[in-house]
Image (cartoon, rainbow, N blue to C red; front, side, top):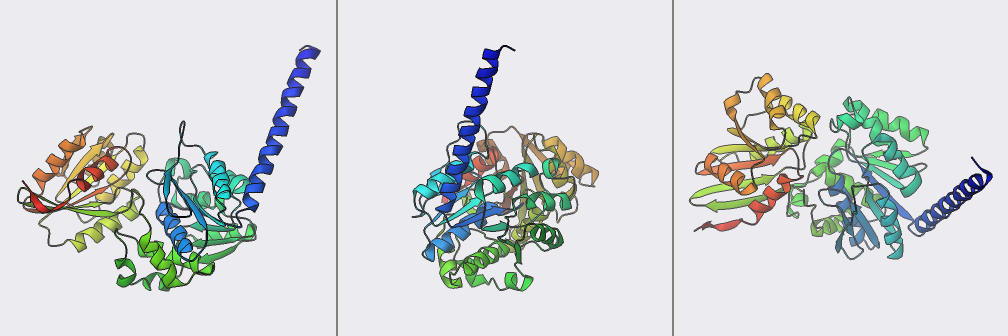
Length: 400
């Protein structure tokens, strides 16, 4: 290498170092302008809890910005207005820097931000280099994304701890892996504040009645815990949460009267680990026990074979549906493991790669006079399309 090339290379390295120093300074500058930073992580409910905390704090008088990754990435401004997060390419944790700068520019005193990383090292990087949270939140730790955070559920708990803040506070509704969280909190000089089982049971029917969608009591209890710790009274925070716009993947109900058939569709697509999915299926069966036919719709993804395998194995042990519709891609994986678990193959109706209008017609043909239909597995792709299809046809009157 010639001396000229060495000088050019040295100059480029120097420029990159200077740019890196400037960027680090800019991040610190923006963070200093946002004194309260709440970093939300977990297997299920991250987006919902992010929205709930932000809404409760906003109602309590805090100038708050929030960012969810969720079904559709959104930034929520201090007045509650939502702005889509523009992504020129695939999702990248670097977008969190942009969110922080926008929050600072809007003079937010609180930023509630959902962790968007799956890989354990990127969860740590997001927290340690970008967010530097004052308050961390882990909703729960369950067996999902095992190809990245696994192989087991305990590994998921350790992976989620990558975003535990240093010298801050960590709130969680998790019960099974508190020992893991405790070890990491001790290492990072952070206070662990779990939501107790008693606090979860204190969420009453009156508390949940104010929501326009299904919200899990533990999510409400966790969000209330954070808001109260920051000085917002329980009722004030709760009233703010009732006003919050739900995530597009939130559990909603859509009742349709269609040529003499009564159909209740429950959107549970955002639940995609076995424990959560079985739980909401049992809730729906109990809530609509009078419905004569009960149909499950699993939206499968060929790029998530581990999830399809888990759900297929798990479904074999659930209270059965009358029929199971398999949509999306890679549906044979789910069916293979469910059949291995003892489910009759004739139980399944395959609708792989069907357009949503054909899936709708297929479902209507299965329900008889009165049916419960619940979508689970994955909200992405045709899952959200099917939700919108049902929502747009919701009517108290029979469709003529």
